[in-house]
Every structure is written in C-alpha cells, then in structure tokens.
Length: 505
Image (cartoon, rainbow, N blue to C red; front, side, top):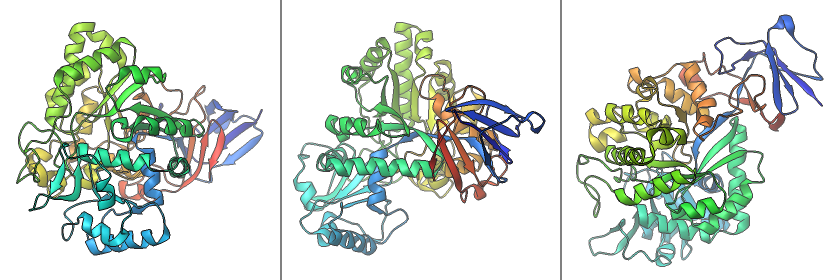
C-alpha cells in the first residue's frame, strides 16, 4: 500500500472553514487531514509548491459526445461572419473529416442557409449546431436524408422551401441521423476526447444528459459501453418518458434533459408571456411545450414507484410551473415525504419566480444550474434582455435566492453550450450580473464539488477532503476561494487524481 502526503500549499476541504496543512491518502481513500504539528509519515510526498489542493470537480450537466465531436470539429463560438464559417467548412471538407461545427450564435452578418454549406462541402452531409444545441443548420445532403415534413421547427424561405435551419424536434431528427451515421470508432473517439478535456480541468465526475429522444437507443448503448471503460465517473441521465426501458438497463436515473421546453437562443423556452419582438417564422410567441400535463404526471408517478430519480429540463417560467405543479400532484398521490426522498431535480431553472423557488424547496426539488449562462447571455444588453426585455431578464438565474430558500444546488456547464470549465462557472457564480445573486468563493467551490455530486440523489463519497472520502483531487496554481473572479479564468490544473491515481497530466 502507498501512503501519499499532500502538503506545502493551501488546502480547501469544502466541508470545513478551517484549512489544514496536509492531506494523507492511502490507496484510494483520504485517511487523514491535519496541521504541521501532527504531520504523519508517508511513502511519498506530493509537494504542492504553494499551489492549492481541492476536491476534484463534478460537472452536473454535460453532453460528452457533443463535447468530443466539437473537439474534433469546428468551434464557431463568437464567429459572426458567414464567409468565415463557410471557409472553415470548406477546409474541413478537404481533409475528409467529420463535417460538424458547433456553438454558432445568430444573428450572423447575413442569414446562412443549406446552400452556403453546400458550396463548402458539396454532396456531403454537414451539421452546424447552435450554441444551445436546440437548433442547427444542415447541408442539403443531410436534409434530404431526413423525414421531417410533418415536424415543427423547419424554417422555410419565401417560396416555402426549407432553408436548412432546423429547431427542436426537427433539429433532433438531424442529430439522430448524424449520430447513427458515425462509426463506432468515431463515437468512441468523441467520448474519450471529452474525458481528456475533463481531466485537464480537474473534473473527475460528470452527469451526462443523454437525450435519447434525439440520439437514439442504439447510440445510448454504444455510449454506455464506452463510458464504462473510463476512469471518469459518468452518472447517466436518459432523456425519455420510457421508464421501463431505463429500468431494464438498470440505470437509477431518468430524464435530466427531458425537455419540457426549449431555449432562449432558439426562441423556444416556454414562457407565460410572449417574447419581445417577432418570433421566427413558424414559432410560437411564447415558445413551445414538449409534454402534456397528464403524460408528465404518469411518467413521474411510474418513476417514483420504481425508485428512479427524475430530472427535467425547464428554462421558461411556464415550463418550471408545469414541473413543480406536476410534482405537487405526485405528492398528493404518494405523499410529500416520498417525493422529497427522491431528490428529483430541475435542470436550468432559469426563470424561477420566488413562488417557484419556495415550492421547489418544500418538495425537496434540487436545482442544476449553469452559472456561465448569466455571464454569457445575462445583463441589460445580453441575449436574455433582447428576448424578453431587461426587466424580466433581471429575474433569471437567481442562485443566491435559491440557496437562501434552502434548495440544494449544483453547478454544471451544459457543455458544449458553455465550455466544460469549472473555473468559468465559479467565476460566473461570484460575479453575477445582479450583484445580490452572487455567491462567495467557498460557496462557489462547494457548488462545483460536493454540491454537484449531491444532485445525483445520494450522499456522495467524494467532493470533499475528509477521512473516508474517495481521493478524487485537483491541484491548482490558483486558490479558487480567494482569487478575484477574473483571475480564475487563467487557472492551470497541475494535477488530477481519481481514487488516488494520478490521471493528469
């Protein structure tokens, strides 16, 4: 057995405001923390060299396959030039690589259609996903492969022909075709590339939001096989109403990104009051609802009866109201204590009112939040304000209010929607557009370590530094508790351990 002593740096335990001088690891467990005066013997000394040791991070909302595909494809975040995007696809097509680009945001400098992609890639299928993943633009070859004539979300030109811009269900059909036509090697490479990104950022646990309604069951089975071989802890949520199919795979969780609505970027978050300005052609002025109340109730009850934890995607206030009201109906049927014991979760929870927060807390519903959403799209001139006005947007993503009401919160990136980067998320938590919704350094660290793991529905054995905890650790060159929020963005991860074994670098 190897006893490894971590010392000579700042140590943040997360569970204790006191900061010890050393941490002792024996095999895969932490067996002691303490002061210099009682420093124990060890087989190996890890000199932190003035750096900071923290529990490794857990990203509570990711899409690993898309994250890996982006790593092998084109990251179009912040690119507004259609000519530059077309040139990038043309260069990619010349190499024979996968024709995938991610993270574009509109408006671009001019509308981009399938014909632009065709000019770049010719007769090959190509897909370019919007930053929120709820919309995409596809080439004609991919469009012709889809059966979407009766699906909503197909943008059309003045002559009624599809432009190649697809939203929600139509975009889901494109994703499903794209995934089904990736080879097993390509799918495996994408997941492994995403895992490498995690390790480099000190992330050793993720909650995978697998939208099986968009990606298909066969693709899920491939993903589960690949994920089982990773050192990375992958907690899987399957976005489906099919409780039996999830239970048959012996997965303890269902939903996650089970859509009750869409996203603000695609004008599809479900709102009680209309968006400002005209909605896109064919889109509702209040966004979309994915589920009927009764179907959602039946799924919640079925999952509750077989002991599955449930997560749902709810961004707009109407979607959040549907989620909470449905859980209240379930509580009337099975009892509020049973619902609270399920530790069910709401992903995003962006437009929650005070009433929503209080009712969610009473039911023990937990919040899976994405802090960088506020950093990238909040504020008086951000995307949210353009969609619904600055006044309504100011009430979004109220992390401090949720915590003050007693809700359990954890943080994630929704990668690729925002980068898989806990330092960006912690900086965003500490520097909210509404200052009274910011949190301090210790709370921000807790939400991305212990808090995120707690969202999985059971008391975690990692995410904190104390005897008995699993030795999942990250060694940083910056103290995330005391550093200024902006300085966190330049943090370097000097080492990552899972179960006492160093996996990065």
